[in-house]
Amino acid sequence: MCGLVGGGVLAPVPPADWRAVHGMMVAQCFPDVPHEYDEAAQAFARVCMVTPVDDPLGVVFVLGEPQDGITYLDVVCSPDMAGRWASRRVMRALAALAFGGLKLRAVWVQAHGTDALRAALAAGFVPATDLDVPVPVLVMTPHSACWLLNGKKERENGKFV
Image 1 (cartoon, rainbow, N blue to C red):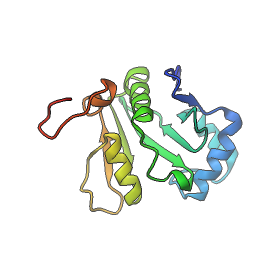
Image 2 (cartoon, rainbow, N blue to C red; image 1 turned 180 degrees about the vertical axis):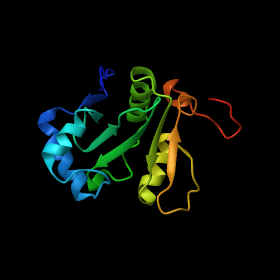
Image 3 (cartoon, rainbow, N blue to C red; image 1 turned 90 degrees about the vertical axis):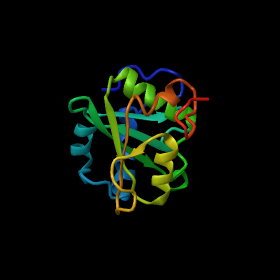
Image 4 (tube, one colour; image 1 turned 45 degrees about the horizontal axis):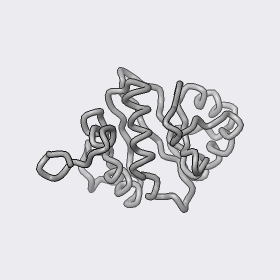
């Protein structure tokens, strides 16, 4: 589903590595992930899984099957990468893939824990629910990601620098 990832920052996760990704997801109790690998592999074939080229499998981004141009983003990372996956370089490439390559209208993520919430906010996701709920939902759109895609940072007054 990924098509061309490009940019030299992210690369598709090859099927040979899917078992390792599945193991991380099961160990971290990801919801809706089948415990049997063969069943998970069928689902993996329908989603877009990418990883930074400079740290393969340290973090894996899973963009689900879009429905009306909207999909979820699962961030599967090793414990040492928890909350540190949102580098500007990686997020710029991920936004370009989601909104340029895949032509999505929105990507949403659930923040499981304080580190995940901080990382999602730092990455440019904006709250779609209250942040004080057990698992807040955040969303990114092409508009909210424009500072990433244009290489600019938005200040509090809405102007870009």
